[in-house]
Image (cartoon, rainbow, N blue to C red; front, side):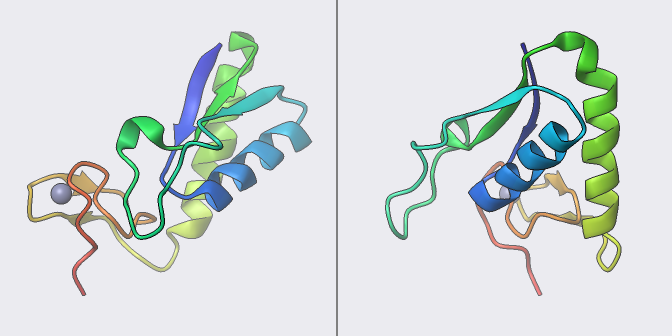
Length: 103
Ligand SMILES: [Zn+2]
C-alpha cells in the first residue's frame, strides 16, 4: 500500500482514481466520507487520499498523476502563499494554511 495522491477536492481525487484504474492499477480512496462540513475547510488529514494496493505500480502511478498535473497546469503557474509555502499551480488554495490563491 502506498499513498500516491491527496487533495482537498473529492472530484479531482476521484478523477485520479478512475484514471489509475483505467490503466490497470488497483487503488482505493481513503477519507472519502470524512470531508467537509458545509463552509468548513476539512483539515488536511481528512482530505481524500488515493492509495495503490500494489507498490510495484508506484512508478507508473506517479507518471500518470504527473501527466494529469501537467494538463491541469497548462494555463497557470506555481504560486507562493503568504505563509511562505510554495504551491503547485493546480491548487487554488494553500494546503498548509488554507488561504485562497491571491488574484
Ligand atoms: Zn499558506
